[in-house]
Length: 159
Image 1: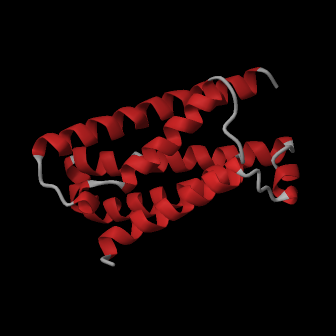
Image 2: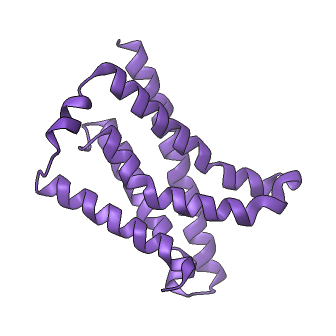
């Protein structure tokens, strides 16, 4: 297996494991109890928010001329962080939530899947496919970021 595809394989594995535990209700009781504690929810939520924010570093490294020399390195970090994202999500919540939280969860996990099925994996050099893939990935990322800020606002407004 090529190193380029290793992140996709690892990410898919963690995503599959997340859905297996979700659909079969395989829960670690100690983590479920921990996720009910207010401080844990806030700290794990902060970690997840920082992770989402960090993922935007790749975009900035590509669009800010001063940082372009780091974009290949950042792409590698971006892919590895994305591969680990189902674990980060799981540590914050074993479930999908309801309402806007369900939407946030589904888009977050769908965007991770989209990231795993990148053009390195599907071996296609089509410019149209690349642009479509990139637009969808960035659009999902924007929606995730907006919903994340909405979620943070709701958490602190109602507490």
